[in-house]
Amino acid sequence: MEDRVRGLLVERESGCCSFFNFTTTPGEDLIRLDSVVDQAHEAVLDALAVRTAPGGEQR
Image (cartoon, rainbow, N blue to C red; front, top):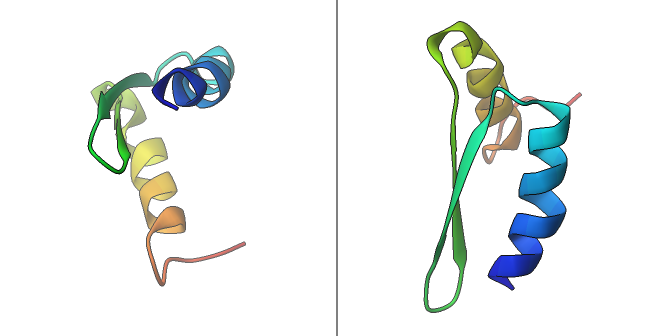
């Protein structure tokens, strides 16, 4: 499953938005995906975090 996350999600998102750096960490029942950006793109990452958080703004 981790290979699938890296192949389907990480590679596609990195191709679209090269300023993202992703790290996957396998767990017992889940795969953790961390996203990091440089300071110039923090607003983009913050906006995505708001949209994906429970109760976040949906458009």
